[in-house]
Image (cartoon, rainbow, N blue to C red; front, side):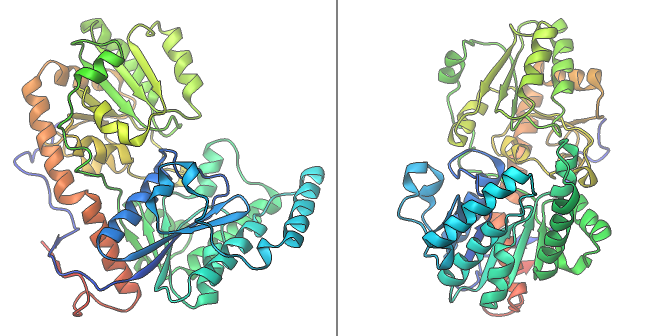
Length: 458
């Protein structure tokens, strides 16, 4: 399916942003997830890291507030995203929640919950996060929190300190858990709904990762549209600059000159990897030398392995497992075609919006084949910066991929256009500037003031 408008991509509403920048802000970036390992290369960690780095590079003070079991990380040092050994010495001060008595009571309650199979409501975690915030975040301008189910620490800290809360929502997590087959039930579900409503009510502004998620929050959670702002993901256009030599990577994977189709990401059900594998089987009939490289890991890993073995694709499919995110740009250097096979997962089914990989493919200057679903259909202009195919159409996905495998000039043209769009619209620098605008509006400093970012609309 080819768009009738190919001369240039459509305009999108981010606007041109000039060099006038806002004054220094003191921002807390909060995330309440007790099991998170900040150094792992997953979407949440990458998003938090690039948000913090972009704001710090723009001259703002940004402090991470992150739950780490029974301590709270409180630091502006981005090195905590590189190794778990760097976390010591970066923990914030605690009050009651840091005492031995509190921890003993907490252990007793958690043990009782486990024995009686009572629902875990994360109240101790929320209290600890709120206390860390109220002690360590004085004189801050606002709290930017990445929404998580049952997480009330940011809400309570915001109310205690009297500073606004900007809530970043990447999915309806209640619906997402239902889609994964682990729905909330009983008291925990009621509490999760109540906690989510409290977060949404308290937030001065809610950042949605996609237009469809914004619509979902507006209609299903009755959030006023004026409180919702769409801000998609982005990519590090410098790190993904296509300057890597592919020879070393090819050699490490046992490859020479074979055409490579690549997918990078988490193995989750909203990525239609069965479509990818079925279409690759078709590709092999015409290009037996083609190779499919799957980079990442996740819950669907075993089912992917089963399909590979059942369909006899083992000789042509390479599964690397998880790699450091810093290695992804070099890994992409061997890809002739990068793919985004998405399932029809709407926000009402827990859809997560625009995949980070899409913008990284673009930044790497890759020719992309994507299913025409969700936000990929809004970012990819068919025939200009990639190719779009219908969802679940195995033959069409295979044909689009083969077209690019067989046509290096077309791959180059699409890749160059994709990278140019990434630079102009989907870089973390552009993301940061839009985020600054949101903050300033929340704080009552409109873009027309002398301290604000100057926005020139197209």
